[in-house]
Image (cartoon, rainbow, N blue to C red; front, side, top):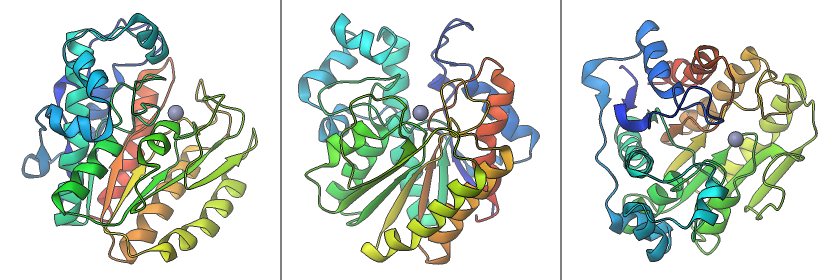
Length: 300
Ligand SMILES: [Zn+2]
């Protein structure tokens, strides 16, 4: 079976190429997936923008309205890292809609991936750290509200701690947040997940994978998970501009195979989102994000 992939051309909000946020990675990732033969027309879906009612399950009414009407206060825009104009607003609604769609496809097909998502620094009351809406928190709460999933596990392996997801889901006993991240990285003030593992600078492939391999069985033993959201941020890579954990391409591949393989072997659906990745060479960065899809395709 081909891997179910969710994508929208407007995930790319068209920033200048020298912007700190490498927006062009979205079209370049699609190009990389085409080159690898991973895009099959019958397994490619395009999301609709998430309706406000979904976004308001995870975010405050005021903040959702501010993003939709492009009237986010400047102070919050500075924390996000870019102004929220019409394209950024649309992109945030589409990415959240995309993760909901990918989650639904994962429930049916066992695995599906969004070519965006993992905006884990967006908290209930505002965005932050290049994240406008928290797509994984939105999707978790939509699935819960619809009764499509009861017990939800979030495995967040982006190099940055999943503070926003922890903030939004802290009162949701059926959603378990796990974040493994660089101890010295953004955000300076972390918000406790249900389980946090902070790694020292320079943790390489071997130590990283050993730690992860020990934790996965603990996570699967906690509940009968109906779905796992996997944030496969590639900013753990040695050449990432913001990461500090020194993983190689092979390390990334082994990590993705370990996570997806673990949960698929237990019959648990996995919804993959790409998370963070920062490099001035955006084609190389897109190829790094493509690893998630290459690995996921072997489990489709
Ligand atoms: Zn990150």
